[in-house]
Every structure is written in C-alpha cells, then in structure tokens.
Length: 439
Ligand code: EPZ
Image 1 (cartoon, rainbow, N blue to C red):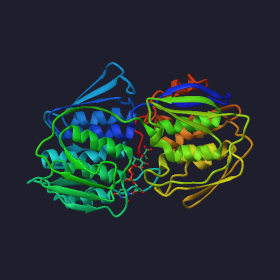
Image 2 (tube, rainbow, N blue to C red):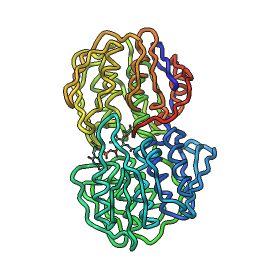
Image 3 (cartoon, protein in one colour):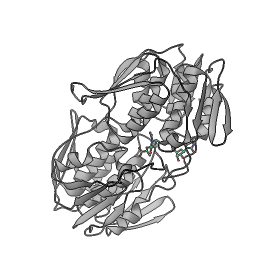
C-alpha cells in the first residue's frame, strides 16, 4: 500500500495539463458493450478505475487495446480501443463489482445488447449507502424482468427492452447514465425526466449520438431517446476531468502562486471558481482552461458552500474546498446535500490542526493561522486529494496513507504538482490485494 509524503513548500508556479474525466471514461467504456463495432476513446485517463473496468470488459469478451497516439489540441495522446465483436459472458461477480461500484452500470448495456445479464449488487461505500433502486426501477420500466438473489441482480428481456416514460424521483447521475445506455437499443421512445445534467452525461449522450443513437435534450433534464436496432463504432475524445481541474485549482489557491490548468474547460467548474473568487482567489478563464492566482501573503476569506447537482457546487469538490477554508479568515459553513457520510476527511484535517465540527450534513470550518504536518489516512478518492492539498501548506511533512484511493482518479498527481514546485513523493509499499469499496 503506497503513501504520499508532501512538505509545505510555498507557492506553486507552472502548467498542469488536465486529463480526461474518469467519471466519463468509465461510462463510455461501458457503452462499448452496445455495439459490435470498435469504439476508440481518446484523451483517456490511465487510472486504477479505467484499468479495472478494462479487465471486467475483457471478461465479457471485449477486446481492449491501449495505445499512445499523437496529441491534438486539447486532447492528450492516450487512447484505448474497445471492440465488443461478440459478448461471450454476461456475468459480473461480486469480487469485481465491489471494487468499483460504477461497474454495476454494465448491467443495462449487457441487457440491451444480449437480453440477459447477472451482475452483483455493489453494496455500500465509505461516503454513503448508495442504493441502486432507481437503476433497477428504471430498467424494469423498460421491460426488464429483474430478480434479486444472493446479492446478485439477474435481469432478462427475452423480447428486447421497450421504450417508456420514466420520471426519476430525484436526480441521480448513475441512474440517468445507466437507463440511457439501456434505452438507446430499446424499441420505441423513452423519455427520462428529472435526468441528471452533469457534463459527463452530456459526453455520454454525444458519444452515443456519434455511434448512431437518437437522443434529444442533451444537457437538459429531459432526455428523449428513440431506440435504434443497432449502433456503430465511433472515435470519441473524453471530456476534460472537471474534478481533477477543480482539485488543482484548490491546490493553487491553497499554496498561492500562479498555475495554468490546460486541456480543460473553465465553464465546467464555474460553481467552484465563483466561490474561490469570493474567497479572494484570482481566476482567469483561458481558451483551454483557467489560470488560478493568489498572493500567499494575503489570507483568504471564509465562504459558505452547499453541494448540489450540476450546475451547482459538486460534492466531488467539497473536501478540497473544505481544505481551502481551513486557513481562511472566519468561519465557513459547508453543507453536503448529495451523500450522507461525506465528511470523513474532516477528522483527518483535524490531525493537521484544522478546526472543524461536523453535525449531520453540515460542517463548520473555523479558519486557523496554519496547519502542521502529520500522518493522515485517505478515506475516499476526493478526501485523499484534499489531504494532499492541505499538505502543500502544512509545516513539516504530511504523509497520506491508503493512496490507492487517489490512484483511482488522479493520473500522475505527484508529477503534475511536482512540476509546479511542490515537494511531493510517493513511498512505495506492498501491493493492495483488494480495496474493498466504492466509487
Ligand atoms: C456519481 O456517483 C459519481 N460517480 C460520483 O463521483 C459523484 O459524487 C456523484 O455521481 C454525484 O455527482 C461516478 O460517476 C462513477 P448519484 P453516483 O446516483 O452515480 C442516491 C467520485 O469521487 N441514490 O447521482 O453513484 C445516492 O445514494 C465519485 O468520483 C439512490 O438513493 O451518484 C446519493 O445519495 C464519488 N438510489 C444520490 O442519490 C439510486 O438508485 C446521488 O447519487 C441511485 C442513487
């Protein structure tokens, strides 16, 4: 199990290229099941999660070939070809699904393509219970016959899926994507109301459209899908990772200095940068990203935030923003409205000297003069990076354990921050056999 050691080392200066979005890539990868033609994804992040899902897809008979092509404007050269010429298995075992809960979303595409699938239920995870009832209700509405048995979902649709009107009771990213992927091959029209509008869903809609799907309402909360009998392959560039981008924006704001985030889109993190500007950070959008600047001699001001569905403030940036507030002047109130248990980083930040109290979905962060390095433990992916950000300004050394969480979603983090002047290094430990949760 590796750890990361960071030493508080003054301001950051330099460029950080933003990678393709993990939370888009893994849904696009699942979409490759829907066609017997090759789907080539460029701007692919190389992460533990994409590697893991690649292994699962191979188990279904999908050919997965990674390569490094030429970089183009805004797109790095990393690409992967997925070719599901024939689906040879439709079984996703517990041991695989529990390691990455988004792999549950192969159920819909497998069902749409073959008419049957057996996929383990993912179970809970450290940030909340995270049920999949909305996914299962929606697939049933499309005509799937679903049985739950011994922790597995068995779904069949021997005569194919049928379009339906589905209104989600509340917004769910996963349920929207999952139902969308099933509906594109269903017979007739499906209308999804109260659909999530996260940019990664727009990316999936656009990629499916490039594959021949008929979908109206991209980027809105009503998606109308007219089923087609088959999809073709496509070449698709994964959208930039707004959470990685927002995390480095917080890092630059915390450490001070001037960092240019490239291969990115400023509009994707508007809710975050609005709050950063209120706190006293200088944010300048550019043609391919954003420049974040702060005079480290000037203290930031406390600002309140509440997490919301897109375009609101992302729950996946809450931990990083909380870190930023630990040394701001005044008290910041942070409401977490998406997941019930997503403040596990607060006690770890406390170990570095932060003053944070948590009651139910609300955290109160009273800014302190400075943080002090200590050993801390990463509890989930975004919590891990919030601890790295804290380590950038903490006096002495901060060692973050369990960084396998971080490796799920941040590509070459030490290199990217190191090039901007951070003193950060990886300490290699024995391999992790089987991280038992989540995302
Ligand atoms: C996606 O999770 C992301 N994961 C999460 O990122 C992100 O935090 C979340 O969306 C919200 O933006 C991926 O894209 C792989 P939801 P997802 O369904 O789809 C409840 C990261 O760090 N719910 O929108 O699981 C659920 O428990 C991860 O990269 C049900 O009750 O999120 C939660 O409280 C963490 N029943 C809320 O809805 C359901 O059937 C929103 O979850 C589905 C969800």
